[in-house]
Length: 154
Image (tube, rainbow, N blue to C red; front, side, top):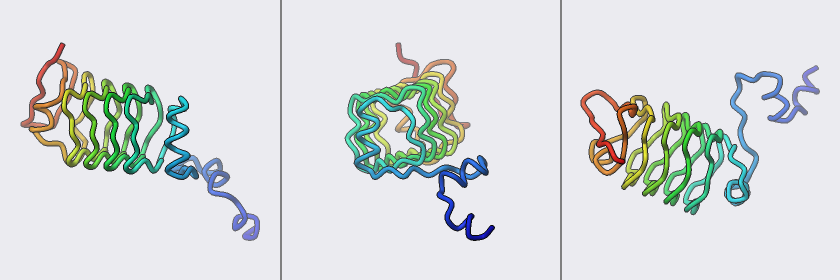
């Protein structure tokens, strides 16, 4: 039995135990190409420094993905799962994060100029500042950490 387990792939182990997070086997270039061709799911993808301008991952699963220093300008990200994703120093200008799942995501240093966060719960993100919220657009359904506020945009 140990020989069989040693030969098992990570994907096989993930299927046997769904509680184990499935890591992507895509290279950064493959992950970027996959998203640019319309595939919205890329959990744990390495997208560090990628240019994702005007791409769409609406309703996709990008849990644990690494977007550090990426350019996500005008990116459609609404209703997607970004649980535990990292957006450190990412340009999210005019991106649409409406209703996205952001628990545990890291927004440290992210540019959120005119970023739509309508209906998004940001109470459990890391690195969020009032300055970022002052640049973003929310609504009555947007949830932010205690002591912070978000402006409403049309």
